[in-house]
Amino acid sequence: MTGRPAAARLRATLWPDVGASLVVFLVALPLCVGIAVASGVPAELGIITGVVGGLVVGLLPGSTMQVSGPAAGLTVLVADTVAAHGLPALGLIVLGAGLLQVAMGLLRLGRWFRAISPAVVQGMLAGIGLVLVLGQLYPFAGQDQPTTTGGKFAGLADLVRAATTTAVGLSGVAVAVLTLVVASLWKRTPWRAVPGMLVAVVVASAVGVLLPVPRIEVGPLTDVVALVDFSLLDAGLLGAMLTFALVASAETLFCAAAVDRMHSGPRTRYNRELVAQGVGNAMCGALGALPMTAVIVRSAANVDAGARTRLSRVLHGWWLLLFVVLLPAVLSYVPLPVLAALLVQAGWKLLAPKQVLALARADRAEAAVLVLTAGLIVLTDLLTGTLVGLLAAVVKTAWDMSRLTVTVTAHGEDHHHVAVRGNATFLKLPGLLETLEAVPDSRHVRVDLTGVRHLDQACGQAIDHWAAGRGGVELIHPASD
Figure 1: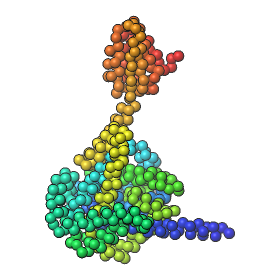
Figure 2: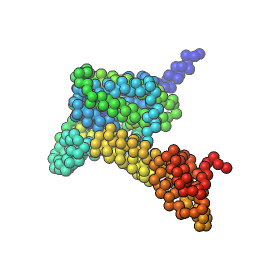
Figure 3: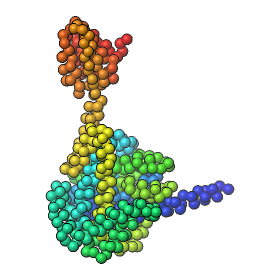
Figure 4: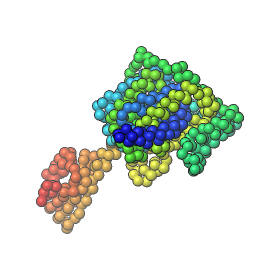
C-alpha cells in the first residue's frame, strides 16, 4: 500500500523537474559561454562551472530552487583578476575563495550577509552592471574591449566609428539588436514558456550565418582543465581570494532571499548554502574554471518552469555536460555579438534603473550611498567601492540614530523651557552645546530630557557641566516624575 503513494509522488515531481531542468539548461548554456568570453577566459571554463554548479552544488543541502553557475556579477572581477595575475592564478584564487566560503558556513556567518544595507547591495549590482554593459558594447562591433574602465570610456568614439563604417561592425550591431528585440518581444507571445533568450540566440545565429561576424569557439573540456599551481601563491592572491569569497557569498545569499519569495517550498538554510557554494567553488578552482554563485536568472527560470525538487538543477548540469561532449560544434554557429547582447541585457537588469529611481524618491541619503558605491566600483574596483559603500552606510545609520531636536521656549523674561528630543550622541554634541549656550540669561531654566531616547556619556557630561556652570538650571531626566 505504501509503494503506490510513493510512486505517485515520484511521478508528480519527476516530470516537472525534468521539464524545468531542460528550460534551465537552455537558459544557462549561452550565459555560461557568454560570461566566460566576457571575462577574458576560454568559453569551456564557463561550461565547466555550470556543470559543477548542477552536478555538485545541486546535490548539496542549503537551497532547493537556486541554480548555481558562472555569474554576470563576477565578470568584471574575474576579468580584472586575470589581467592582474594571469589565467593560471585564477584556479588557485577560486579554490581559496571556496575554502573560505566553507569556513564561513561552518562558523555560521551566513546570516550576517543579510545585515548588509540594501543601498550598498543595489549600488554594488548597479556598478557591476554599468561596467558590464560598457564592456559588452565592444563585441557588438567585433572589437576587443579595453582592460580598464577608463579605456572603455575613452574608446567609445572609435567604437561608434567601427560600428557604423565597417562591415563587421554593422553586421555585429544588427545581430545584437535583433537578439535584444526578439528576447524582449517573445515575452508577449503565447509561447513565452519557451525561454525568450534561447529563441533570440537561435534567430540571431541563423541570421548571423549570412553575415561577417566573429563566432565563439568551443573545444573539448579536457583541453582547458588545469591543475592548481600552488607556487603562484602570494599576498596579492590572498586578497583576491577574500574578495571573491565575500562577493560570491553576498550575491548567492541575496539571490536566496529573492528566490525564497518566489515559491512556497522549503526556505534556504543560509549557512548550509554557503558551505555548498564553497564546495562548488573549491572544485571549480581545482579544475581551473570560473567562480560560481547562485544566479537569479537561472533560479527564476527554474521556479517559473515548475520545478519541485533539487533534481531539476542537478539534471540541468547533466544536460550541459552531455551537450558540450556530444554537440560542441553547434556552439560555433553562435556569433559573439549575440552573447554580448545577452550580457548587456543581464547588465541592465543588474543596473535596475527603476529601482534606483524609486530609492532616490523614497530616501535621498540611501540613494547617495548607492551612487557612491556604484560610482567607486566604476572608477576604482569592486572591493574598494563596496567597502567604502559599507562605511558610508554605517556613517549614515549613525547619523540617523543621532537625530536630535532642541527647542527653547520663553515663559516670560525669567523662565525658559528647553525640550530635548531624539538621540543625544556625540555626533550631535556641537549643535546641542551651541543651542544651550545661546539660551538667554534668566533666573530659572528647565531642561526637559524626557523625550531623549538615548543619552550617551559625552552628551550627558556636557549637559551636566553646562548646568553646573550656568546655575538656576533644573534638569528633568526620563526617570523623573
